[in-house]
Image 1: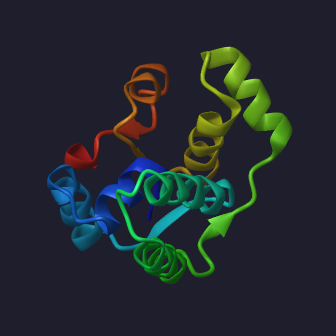
Image 2: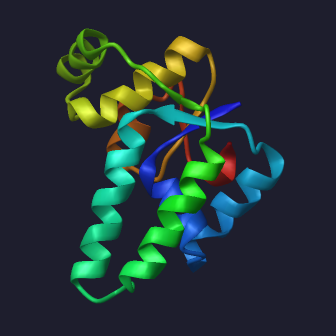
Image 3: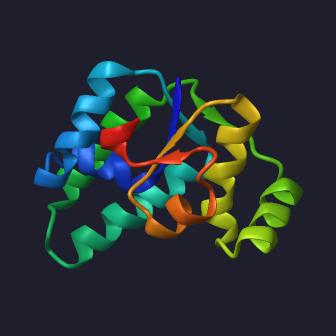
Length: 131
């Protein structure tokens, strides 16, 4: 089991070159979990791509459907107060802190490409290639 953030999921599902590490991670450990926040973050990214004509709306809907299949029953609740405390302590956004809190609570790693998360949460955060 591993917690993954939105950028790792987007890289996997959009099949981009940077997603090769995400693909390899998913092959090694397909038991991906994330805070419930992931759904909103993915939707927001995909809406942005569709609005900028980088992705057709139908393709965006397909990608979100694929994400829902991967995370079926694997989106977890994260305490808002724990996320806020972690954000204040680390300087991360409350959104990013949810992923860190989730990984710590589950006692697993957090795969991310986010440099700030990697720097501020080295106890759990790793790049996908190192996960």
